[in-house]
Length: 186
Image 1: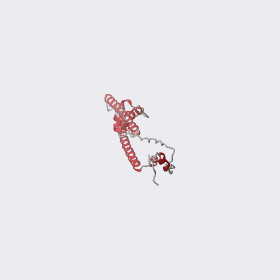
Image 2: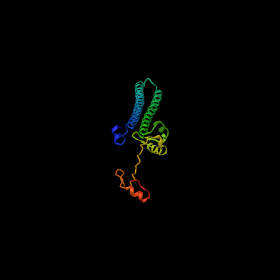
Image 3: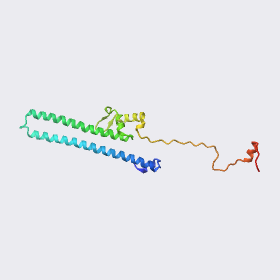
Image 4: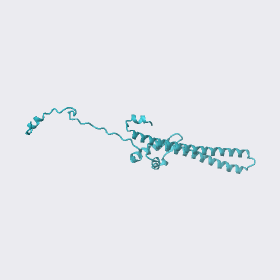
């Protein structure tokens, strides 16, 4: 969002533009922090998977030294860790996508809005989120105070009497006074 964009929308008050830009900047910084946090979580989980893969390769090489039963236990443990790591990565991605969509709905406080969402009804298929936009729209209708809403300017209707207020009165004051029975001073 740029200052020019806001000016093009008809906002001319520089103080209001500054406040909007400050709020937008804070939102962007919060999203950057969330992205960095999620990236770090994903990197940690990927490192865990890589480490488990190395452990399995080491065990395969030492198979003759390790009993078949021990190897199967470790393989089972590895399979569980791999499955849970993939689930954790999917959950981190889902959480990020949810946070991103909530932030794009222009909330006053994203955390409060997120608490109002039934996350069990939200699904993530690896590409897109489903079930969230409907809940956000319903929340905007039921609890609009949770969102920053652009105020619509009311159209002002002009009533004219047919007489221009910039022109001189063409009414003869003496005539009006005589009709009303008033005496005029001369």
